[in-house]
Length: 481
Ligand code: NAD
Image 1 (cartoon, rainbow, N blue to C red):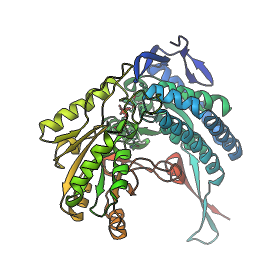
Image 2 (tube, rainbow, N blue to C red; image 1 turned 30 degrees about the vertical axis):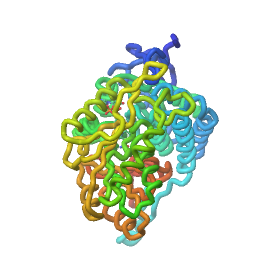
Image 3 (cartoon, helix red, strand yellow; image 1 turned 90 degrees about the vertical axis):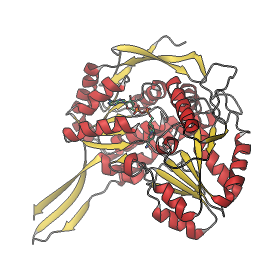
Image 4 (spheres, rainbow, N blue to C red; image 1 turned 180 degrees about the vertical axis):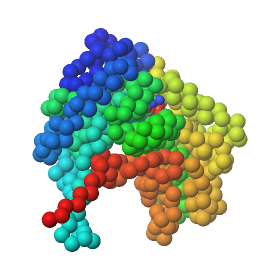
């Protein structure tokens, strides 16, 4: 066990927290990953002050300086992807391949935004008045608070921190309490490889109720980018609105995957398995409602259960593991509660949903598939956030579209079909922010806009060139020449 405490990073210094927390490995609960500082509200205020004091310096840095800093961070993340991926998998429980992939993605995001810094542009408009010039420019918001969930402990922080820094903002970053290890490793690289002026980037680990709340309610934090649950997100949204701060919320999903009669069965099963169960189903974009047309229903369920039987659930770092453990005891209990609820509501469990014993003590759950479910059951209305999927049988394409859109969420949706007509129609009529045809609902590109509609997201899109909408403030200037 590591005894040295990983500290918070404030005003360019590594500092002890108010208390210390430990994170454990969900694949082996006897394995303590490390000890991490936990801030309180007072220390969080110090981090916010540091970011406030540094904002003029960072906003004045040249675009090239900012670009170089992000490029160095991205390059180091990519070079250390194996080691960082291992830490991530040990801490969060996704498989090693998934962990390494996520570390690499974080690196590529920083490199993408290193380029975006240099592509920042403004506009010049003709005025309606003679002799007047109109210029539209974008400026940094100032101090940005970044609050992230546990399921993508490197990629989500990267896709918020990189654009925040790229567009000249200073950052106070609060990672999820469950996964401080990956966040700390990322912060260490940013602090060192980025060679940023003191206070430009600050890390404050600790509980959401104290650290997150202090960030969300500070009048010095001009913008908050949050990813996490609906309940927390809405609370932060209200706090920000009350004090007039900008806010971006990425929250839950209940993503539909439609499977039409004309789908290629193999493709449909691969897409459903990947979308529903990989990363242990702990993805906001995961497919949890499989909406299947009548005449392919039985063949699909049979092929799904056959493929599910081949999936190996085991230690995240073990070779051959397809699906790692659930991330925590709390999440496992939530998954089990939903499995019991589904059964009580009359759904038929055709595969999985069982606690598993492996060589090490971890939170192992076999992926679960339910049939005979209706769209108004709780299992189809609420986000489980685990390896649990349900099949909803529909009579035709029209019913499939209607069921797919009948949800309070709207993050991602998918369709498996060989018909161009239905694919095009579904892309048009889906009420989700992201639509997939013959590819999994989860798994997106880092240079394309990411976000949803309805209860899933609030505020401008994340990622790609769309990120600048949130991380900059528009100024319109009129000059009489
Ligand atoms: P969570 O809401 O419990 O926590 C998210 C973050 O908010 C954590 O850092 C937490 O410490 C902090 N927090 C908690 N209470 C707070 C408060 N009162 N004030 C300020 N901050 C507070 O979410 P989680 O359990 O870490 O993550 C799982 C959720 O995240 C799921 O609902 C999932 O769908 C969602 N998610 C959404 C996306 C997306 O892009 N839409 C991506 C990944 C995860």
